[in-house]
Length: 296
Image (cartoon, rainbow, N blue to C red; front, side, top):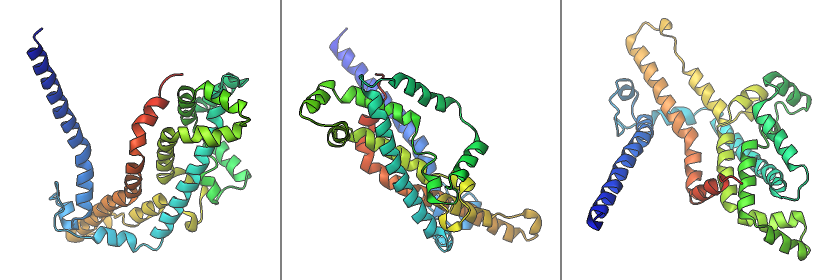
């Protein structure tokens, strides 16, 4: 086949890829733009459907209503604590579980891995889990948000595969000859070489803790320990309206507009910290998830 024809077909293929990816980008990006624009628009513009791309009648009414709530900053502080503390525990537990399972000389690793996988398929259910957490005295404490989910088996499998494909046996043997113990080997060699997968797992764990809702609803009773998601839920519930209680159409529309405005503003407030964190780990994301996903 003529080289010119091949070059033209390659250009056409690349052009089709750009067009397809551009369409996918717009499909994914437009809902985010719409939510942000709606959160900065007026209630009348939101309820009448005037917002399409840019804010209409710019207003900070939704954000003012949210940040005037007395518990919003408490929720932010608690969610930040749960995210940092929980992610730290998650990463430590994941590494300590995944590294031994990646060593060929570890006796019984297949049986232990089978038990781990078993927990992915079967669990005791909500009531036994609650009774266990309650009997351990963890309910209504910060530990109820971080201890029950201290380790995710799927992430252990990913980390184990990463260690198997990235940490050569020769490196471990050389360290043993130099008198390096396992703990020192993990801290001094394994962790620095595993920065990509640690960054990826940290992002996954952090997002899970930041969006944690059900665990707080079950285990936390004190408002001082509520995470941000529960606070935002309460704000939205407080602005629920019953049309049967209103006879004035204008009042109904105004209340409905405020409810929709709060909904969009709450989405932005809840998503902003994660969007800020992501760029710092994005450079590790592709490398870590691709290498960790390889079968060992």
